[in-house]
Length: 569
Image (cartoon, helix red, strand yellow):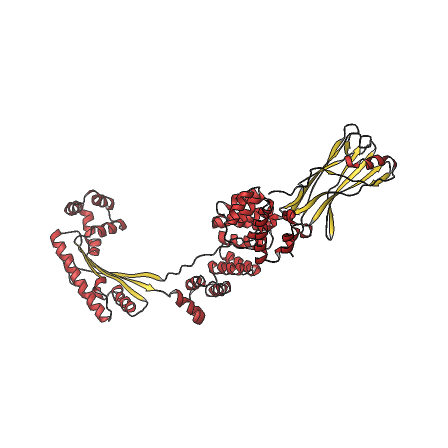
């Protein structure tokens, strides 16, 4: 950051001549003492202001028996803050202070830091000097050392990113019903014992319910008929075709009884002469002796006749296969596929307005995303917590809405309710955001650090904390490659003035702070017109920033500019 510099690094002390004998010379020659302050204009970083004052005494100046007490004091409207003092002494004094040689002269240094408060923004640093020589005392006139305090870091935007959980609402939900009928070996007639099975009867109910529901659409009704992989291939091909026909005949009668119409293009009829795939699956799931050997036969041979013969050669196993496996493969499988059509966006919004009590959890979580008004979102998420009090997503998202409404206590309560259900990185990040807005940096940093799995938003939040702590390089590493106002501010605070300017002018934030930061950088680049124009823009968005600009030493060069004085009034 470009600093405002005094016209010279050396500030000469002025003194009032006193009548204290041996101190007269030190007082009268006080203009020979030099002072250097670092920084030349006081700055606030991380809530603290650091000061270092170097004092240089020339040769033949410091009385060998004198003791001087140097006290830096920050003076501002309404008060003053005294800093750490230093005592220096002549070479004949026997106390344990910094010794200044009479012949060679010497140096003393005062270093201290103090906590910043807002009333200090327009302040001055003075050095108070008192002298003692063998019981005689003298006070020097206060020496002004520096102006202060630059507080540009306080322009950080406290906009931590909070996160929501997504909903699982699906407007179109695929569903299907699958069942089958079995056949006697080498037969294709549909037996009553099969059509009376519970799962086959239930297919009729599924068809009837789907056909009578205007929010259900048929996607496919498929019949797959099979013959078991034993016997002649030609015979099995004809057999599977017959089974397909008999199954279709049963399906058509079932549709007619259920008074359901399925478009012809949605009907699919398939047949498989020898169901080796089904055979393999049943074998893998079985505990038949020699199972592994049979599976190796399937993998080694693709010719169906060779496969069958090799399996028959395993005589003991084949007898079990005839009883347990092959009968399950003589079948026709029915697959009824439908799409269940949920509420449209407009329908959900209308239901929320007129019949909200009928909405279920996922519908509520999704409906909240359809509204722009944050209060409405909060109401919907509140309803979701009532419908599903053990849903951490509902409680967290309610906290998110409260946070964006500026209701930080309510947000914290909702986030804590979510955390009681399950500890989660997203929830910890959100609690960290609340702590940040409540000015508890330590707690915020702890929570952000523990929630790194929540995503890159956490690093952005940690960047804000780093700016507040005065670690601008660390802030930049957290902000990463994404441009933002806070990243531009961190660049400026790390001497990246030109990079900061290019970034901040290309943002589309339109906030008062964006315009104000542009003005700060432009003022330090002696681009007065740009600075004034952006100050006007800032004040138009937030007139209260005028009070800051009046006292902001970033604009010290403009304090006497007539246009500046007019726009800050």
